[in-house]
Length: 296
Ligand code: 0GY
Image (tube, rainbow, N blue to C red; front, side, top):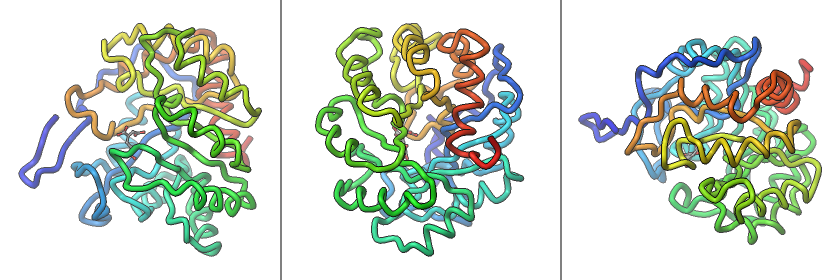
């Protein structure tokens, strides 16, 4: 971790290694964020962390270095429900980024239309207590109903310990659902462990749930080459090849102790998606279906 003289944290490495794996042309990094720039887009007064700037220039330089073509930018909790930093990054991407917003449940239809116009294709409901003060399920369900007409989906972030209590909420969502980071299972339990089993039951509960097979750096404390992550996640990619997405998670909010090397994260891809067909679905077909359906 690096802290500047205003107390702002940098949780990403400035010089990631170049990956050995070459993503197929058109590959999408379907989970990443931007922070600021703060001079233009201030952080929320409720932000739980205060990061250094990680704006679109740095994101797109990383995209090019890693061999990706497009980004899906997920509104980071430090910007609250002010989506301007995300919209700005999409606007300067030359059509190569779309996004997921975080909205005040009281948002009006005209504002939702403006977000759609700006490239937003989903809303995120975050249930991590260390990141947000409240997660009003009834109001979220109401939002999910109101975004249906736009063809959006809902992205949900929660940890494995609350999966069971999330089931009725998730069952009530009328749009497709994307679960961030597989609901954060303990990958050390392996593919047949309790967490992965419970998560598979969720994926089996309806045919429009997707998940991001992301964040070996958060889920596998042993670090690269993330062996427990690989052995737990490879069977999931093989069982649900049309419902998985991949992303860097750059700039890795809150990863303070160890700065993830994005090149090594990319090198996990061929370990969890072992054929070219699985890689094409994971990196191109699936994210295009959700985020650029107009270009399918
Ligand atoms: C992630 C994970 C985290 C943070 C956020 O919006 C956020 O601040 O998503 C986290 O701290 O686990 O998905 O990027």
